[in-house]
Length: 220
Ligand code: SAH
Ligand code: DHB
Ligand code: MG
Image (cartoon, rainbow, N blue to C red; front, side, top):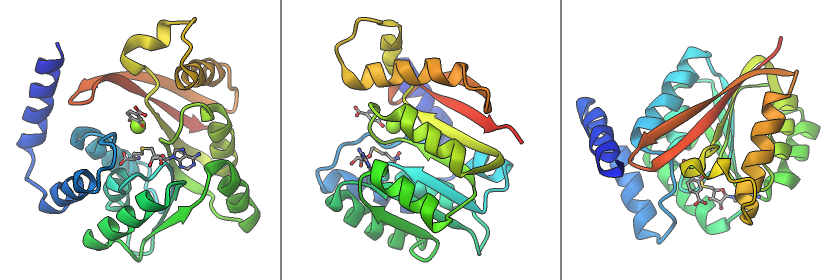
């Protein structure tokens, strides 16, 4: 199945005009020896479309890697819009800053170095936000905590997107010893019971195999 999912994903991607900047960003990520766990091109396009659909002017991302998903979302911003992206690994942050500069987005995007659990309270204290769109894509152990911060930092009717909530179907395994997987399971259950948001969970297939994203709108 994976071969066909990847082939159809490539088909979808190839329908659209090619994008040398984004291709260069993926090359730079590979050349830097970083993990290739960025969202796929088709998923990046989804983030872009959703950012446009919610008229995002102020976006928060948790988990930058090389800036690939940040570029897709930041391209949906108006000229005075802002995106803040949180990254714990200094090397990833450096590569991301270079990639964002290459994409002409250095002014609009701030890569904030630090552990998300430490930086999120700082953002709240600084009065950052409210954010129209928040994309959560860092470690999975702390998903539920990140989501709580996201609900606090989002504007009413703000959209929160959470990556990797299906994990090849492993999410059904209630006896997994993988801490990340347990974090995902805890998150999905908490999301479904969370009266602050209206949410759903999407299964997805494509070049990254079988996974999914949760979508939540904060009640107004
Ligand atoms: N959103 C990116 C991919 C992010 S991969 C894209 O699609 O292009 C996950 C990133 O989260 C990695 O760069 C990792 O270093 C970072 N990360 C992991 N734990 C973190 C934490 N506690 N705080 C901040 N960043 C973290
Ligand atoms: C992993 C992390 C991700 O955010 C992702 O989209 C895919 C894989 C990982 O840690 O393996
Ligand atoms: Mg991810």
